[in-house]
Length: 175
Image 1: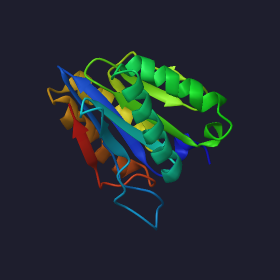
Image 2 (image 1 turned 135 degrees about the vertical axis):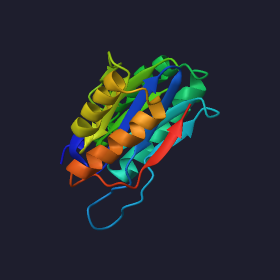
Image 3 (image 1 turned 45 degrees about the vertical axis):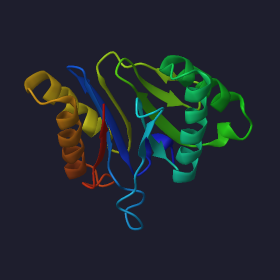
Image 4 (image 1 turned 120 degrees about the vertical axis):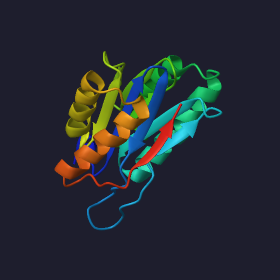
């Protein structure tokens, strides 16, 4: 199964100086419903989340934290260096996950193919319910006065009502 379609949904939203990342708790449809696939990093200044295999995602969290420390919290540099290592390392390139990382200035989706994508809009989503969560967030950004964290939570709840692989056990972190 592609990491894009793992049983979890991660959504990041930024609006008016507020940034948030949220994720549902789904690991599989029957084994675990309250997993935490988002994390604060680098003294609480960076948020990260992953969709994909839990062991692979945790490994990537550890690698990414190391890159943030190595590059003194420079998120763009850490993201690029992680993608380079992920793509070229014999062990890492077998990891199946996608990551979203963000701080107050930048937001990136990182993949093992070497992709480091900074979305044009202030929304990024990965996982099984990503298209639903992203569509809801885009509509709420355009047609509401909700904050970034409120948009992230509501969008994930909307995705959970549509996608059978996304649940409503939402975990949030915000900057």
